[in-house]
Image (cartoon, rainbow, N blue to C red; front, side, top):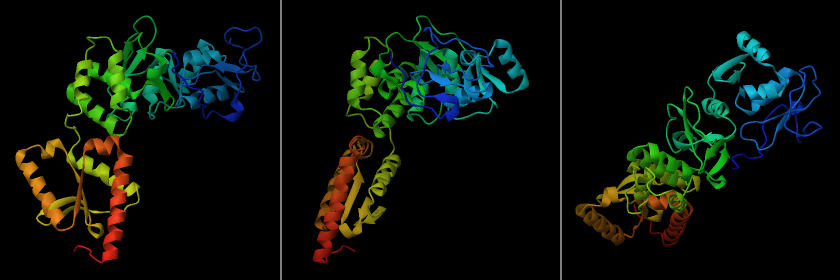
Length: 365
């Protein structure tokens, strides 16, 4: 399974060479005396397909690996550049290496760094591991906070060992198209991550993550349906996710969140900032361009589903039309799944109606 990419790392230039060259004689890379500073040491680095090759003084080799992994290194990587277990223990006792997981160390200082726990967890669980479940959902920005433990799935034939701060899963069903490298970390893609989340989360947590994924276009309903078709029947959570994919379901996004997202789209398009929640003819216009006599309104089943609300909307339509005001309503799906088409339509209406009204000198006040 291909979980890695050939993307480069920001290692010191003098400590790396671009084309890994195994030692003459073939086979896997072997340790060499530390004093041999000219020897090129091939090392497996997290999130990189090929060996990264380091050389130079020992401290420079360590720094090159650490720079590629948010300051974290694994014992097997240190051994690959010529360090012995005794040398590793000496640096731990002196404080230049700090244990953050079994056989995983922070170089220089033990302070927390962004994605440091996730990097250490992957190093601790081995080459055939990746972020999944809540950790994958959080990495893709579909959740607002990181989980208490790092979710890692190993592709080894047995269940991974339990480690502090790591929730280990095992899978033999992941395929290359379900995984990728994101921010230098092996991780399941958003559609697969949501399916995994469905197995461990409650409906509300899953609903919020799903709506966010669709809103930021991290995935699509089509891709999610494809994931559901591939899983074995009876998988826990699949039926919940399938129900949440019903197009008729009301979004979990609040009115204010939807309006903020639409406002951000308007600003990004360079349109004149409209009046928001503008009192107008006995009603309120969500977004009102006065010069264009144009109103945009967020339309949601959650806010417009009652008979009374439906009647009020029809009355508003008639009153606005009688005064030459065009009202366009957009749903959450328009904003989240068709943002370019939505903002293009709004831009066209604002521009055309402003010019038309200016030409006829009929601006509404």
